[in-house]
Image (tube, rainbow, N blue to C red; front, side, top):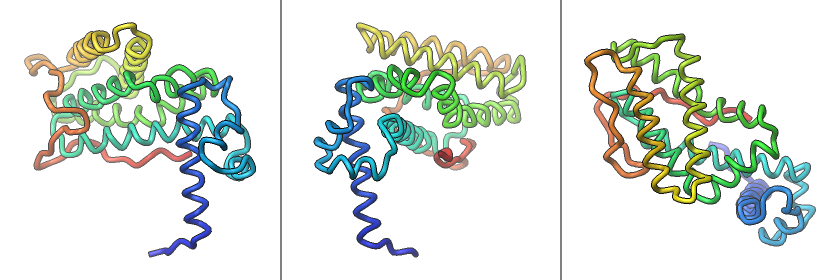
Length: 230
């Protein structure tokens, strides 16, 4: 076991405080209006301390965005741990994602600001790095178990499902009635997902469990992963 020095612990704590302050400021003001000074002030550190960890505002924003993605991924993995049915695992993950899209921090940073601040291509690549592999692996498991019939290679189908889910999330985040749009978006996604079920298979139902609690089973078919590399 490696014991961190006080200096290392302080540096990590400072970085975490800066990232948390940045999330608050980017949520409240948007990327364009936030200054390094305002983040430093909220984090109660010097401007130099911010620049010690982040080269510029763009790097700070990306760290804030990736932190939210890390939290979402961890919640999805925790909620789907032990789930036998890969379709249920996808449904639970989609539910958690769409729920996050109703929350100001995630909706503002991950959906509204990230495509602009990072560029659409980089934002899309990040989304895929976090979640495309999970979708693809779940679909492959479904095929292996005889639960799914795919019209194309699993990677392509997973890419299309992720694109549909991203668009559904944007609809929820931008809706004047996000709770109703959440219900409509989830039902539509589950209908789309259910079309991949093998003939005679049960429909894909909305998860009955609360957010973050998908329950556990005796044998897991949910692909395990760790946070994607930076």
